Image (cartoon, rainbow, N blue to C red):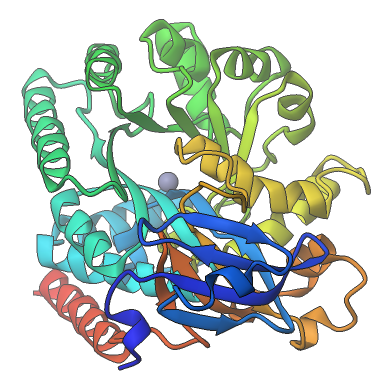
Length: 435
Ligand SMILES: [Zn+2]
């Protein structure tokens, strides 16, 4: 194995293209960008343990996936093209009922491989057996915000179980003391969590000063049912229960009205746009990007889980998002390539509290390199255009997270074994369901 994968070390990237200029980037022993600029390699070459040749490469901040259920990689291709309720009740839920902690560990490792291969360095996850997910993220070297999917189904007894599971996960992740892995709370949605449960999660996340990860207004049915049951639309329910604040990431947000876009922006909520999942599950409305942008909400991209996507490639998400917005809202100018790229980097980093997602001195070195000589980068008229409309995740050649090289020239150490283990977990899981 290449020495560079073994440990965190000082790295110098030479002659790499950053925002149109050719620069050198020095990564210090703390995993931070210690220096960035033209011609700094003279000063840092001797003290750097490794030198990466950045010639004909583009450096970008690592991408951030703000909504996923990582271990659902095991369900990739298991069931598609079915009516939503049938798909959930006959296929997805029965399989999930048989999931074990080891499955989640294997599925999360597979998800990390896929995300690293496609240039993602950090993700916002909600699922079950999150201690096992945390173990996987720890080993794989990525960043993640991990939330236990809290579902009390309006039962007091179930609520107590979910509260226990949430507290246990948060304690466990805090005890790992790994700056790359943050705990969050995960109120699943207004139709699966009681107001009492929502209030408890809001209060607990405030005490612990941790993030909140929630599904919001994904379908028209969710909105109509909320109005029928509570005489309130979903954002209002969340707001009354204290769930909407600057630590909150709300996924989907397809069925928001203008007022609700203003409310989310006012509360400082970050929104995760999940266009592929929304189209696959035919939610029949695109997130109102223009209103959210005008109101000043922080916007980002998420893939959602692999059952409804079926990959974790944020490059694809950027393109589909930029196209869906134009198509649905009938505007050729809506969600430009520059805006899409900024959502996947800056917007995502802000959503997870990871800073501004930029390449500058002093920030953690979360850097991806792309090949300028790839077909999708030829010719090179416009960086954002190539990234969003032409390239896919496989144009990423090298990935660095927190200063550690996770992939170099498309090689990730141990990848074959991780893929085999995950495939075996998935087929064993399907067999258990059939028994
Ligand atoms: Zn989801």
